[in-house]
Image (cartoon, rainbow, N blue to C red; front, side, top):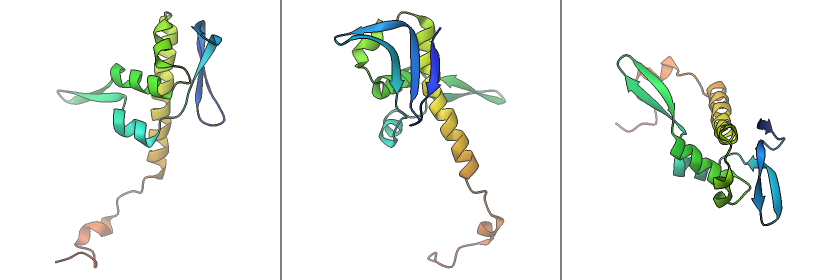
Length: 128
């Protein structure tokens, strides 16, 4: 079974069920660095909201998740096609989604709540 471990620098190590074979030998784990501003602006959110009558449901965008794995992994993206165990692929996808879950939670905790004083009219510095 693959495992996902969060490292002290915020990256995530996914230990694979079957190692990848590289020119340097076997790789038993893939480390994903935390996505950067550039990654996010280029790829977007890995979860899209699908609108239905009266509801919105989250849906994973696997093309975006793949993009993050290929950009953030410590291995050549061509080596990722060696992954033949579905659970390993799913663990990499979960690791990527975990970055976004944690970031969303952090943003929610720090976002200021709207103030009713801002809705009373234009601010003193706004042009009229």
